[in-house]
Amino acid sequence: MDREFVVEDLVMDSALKKALIEDCAKMIIAHAEELTSLDQAIGDGDHGVNMKRGFESILADADSLAARPLPDMMKAIGTQLVMKVGGASGPLYGTLFLTLAKEISDQPTAENLKAAFAAAFEAVKARGKSEVGQKTMLDVFAPVLAAWDNRSDLASHLSETARLAAEATVSMKAIRGRASFLGDRSIGHMDPGARSSSLLIATIAKHFGA
Amino acid sequence: MANVGIVIVSHSEKVAEGAADMVRQMVGDAVPLAFTGGNSDGGLGTDVGQIMEAIDRAWSEAGVAVLVDLGGAETNTEMAIEMIDEARQNRIAICNAPIVEGAVIAATEASGGSPLDIVKQTAEELSPQ
Amino acid sequence: MNAPQMSSQAAVTGSALLTNAVGLHARPSVKLTQLAKSFSSTISVSTDAAGPWIDAKSPVKIMRVKAPQGTTLYFEALGDDAQEAITALVDLVERRFDEVEGDDHG
Image 1 (tube, each protein chain N blue to C red):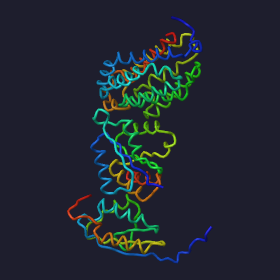
Image 2: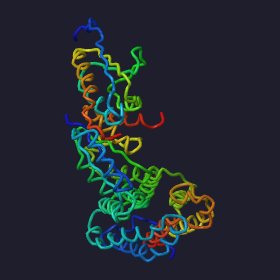
Image 3: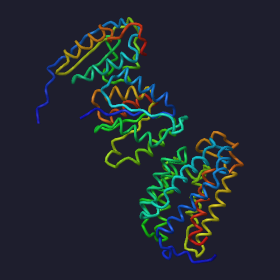
Image 4: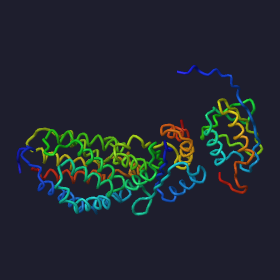
């Protein structure tokens, strides 16, 4: 479906917010086993379980979350993710949403969305003390930010960029986190955080015409 | 002004409790003290919510010094500090010191009424300079 | 602003023999430091009458002394409460840091 990416056309109302929450949560829950097995290969095997727990609690709260203004909603989601996901990803995803909450407007423009995401990317970098190229979710976020321009099919472009970026982590060597202790043995497996973040980006992009 | 409080955050509940026990036995009751260890499943790890609660328990107007063990404890403690009310955020200091010795040294320094920056600095004398 | 006090104060000194079994181990170190901190004077400790001198209020430095039983600790204090400080510290050492013998608390 080709449509011009005009964020301003979409009203960020409760219905859209609820749909975004539900779809993201269901996507993560549906892929929990896959995320677990990715994490078993190169991590401590809890990414799927942790993310599922966090997103289940968000799903259960979908109505009350969607009723809030967007910044408040993001803050509440970020807080829930920190408290419920745990492991290494809880603080990372929590920081992502808490930072989005600080930067995003209630009815965001395309520029505002991009700026908010850029700020959130920096915050996640700082939280995880990681850099691009170390085989983490940053290796999905950075290409997505770099690809973010004014094209008409932006949503599907970003979704595809995220998918390809997650794929690209397969051949990377982990330099951060538990996977880094595997050294070369971390090569040949997709980073679980890259997978979960590309799934989330794809899900969100669908609502913007992807 | 009350003494600086000490918070111990370990991946292990037993280590956290043991370190706190050593602080109490060696330094006495002069400093507020709290500890947390293990994740919400009772396994090795740390929990942001539990860390926030430990900071509350040891809270003092002079602030708190936090001792941590491995990397995740530090990240989760940083997360906890960010989620705590703004008024208290700049009175919480994570010390780059070994967790057990650091807790004892920090508590000793705190028991003499030293301010938070000195408590942190003193504990960090234990780490390679 | 007060005129700086001319140091008509001489350093007050004292010494005491470590007789407790574990010498200046961790717990005695903490007690020594805590006691020193309760005085306003600057206080130094050495295992030799000629120095080198260590700040008695520094827990890390005192813990690193690790003086064994049989060592003599020398104290030097400068300040308004220097005499009380020396008396108290010498007394602490002579009381064996109030440790119960057989307690190996570090």
